Every structure is written in C-alpha cells, then in structure tokens.
Image 1 (cartoon, rainbow, N blue to C red):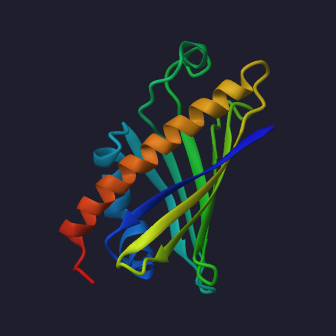
Image 2 (cartoon, rainbow, N blue to C red; image 1 turned 90 degrees about the vertical axis):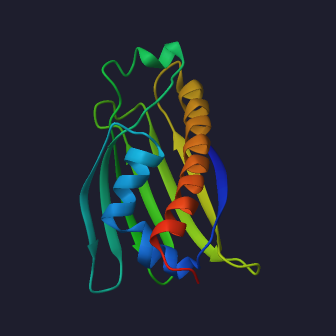
Length: 172
C-alpha cells in the first residue's frame, strides 16, 4: 500500500536558475535544513555533477519531528533518514528516495520534483510524493503522518527559500 500526493510552491527566480544557483549549493542546503527547517543535523554525503549532466546528491538528515505517540515508540532516540537523488538535466526532474536506515520497513518515500517557469515570473515547484510503509499494524498511520509532515516541511522550505533567494541571488 502507498499514499501519493503533490505539494506545490512558487519561487522568485527561473527554474534553471533555481537548479543552477540554489538547489545544489552547499550553503543553501545547509541553511535550509539547519536554519529554515530547524533540523538538528544535515550532512551532504555527495553532490556531484557528472559528465552526462546528471547531478547525484545524497544527504543524511536528522529532522525535527512531532510524532503521534504510537510512532514515537518506533523511533526512540530520534529519526535519521537518508535521501539519495538524481537530477536529470534533460527532463529537469530531481528524483529521490528517502529511507530510514535503522528501520527499513518503517518508511520509503519516492519523490519527483520539478520547477516550471511561471508566465507571471519566477517558477512553480511541483513535488510528487509516493509514501510507503510496511510496518505491520500502523502503516496507514505512518503514511498519513508522513504526508502531514512533508507538506508542512515543504511549505516551510518554500517560505525560507523565497527569503534566502532574495538575499543571496541576483534578481532576474
């Protein structure tokens, strides 16, 4: 079983500029997770642009979460996740998989993120999520909680990113 949903957003620069000047930069990534989302830790394991134009990025993240009591017991001592993603320069899509190494059945999240230039300026973000849990007895609760958390976090990321872009990136 899985839960699919989409989260949108709008950014004040073109899609190409967002990918090239923001998304894959170390400073933006660290500031987004540590300052924007107030996560305790983020580590960039890899961020590499290959000769074919693909960018491969891996992150290890400790999020700040408010979980239902039933889930808190599963993640005693906190939750750490790993995101492994690839940006395809032809389709302009970043596909990633998020897993919880300490509890592989708890949660797997597959994402497809794209930015499309908006006729009114800037660009629109579209993130398609496929959330899966195979944790016996509470899979639906895990998926429902993941949807709520991801929606809140991606909305917060949009707000932080708009402010960050205004102070770090030259206007279009």
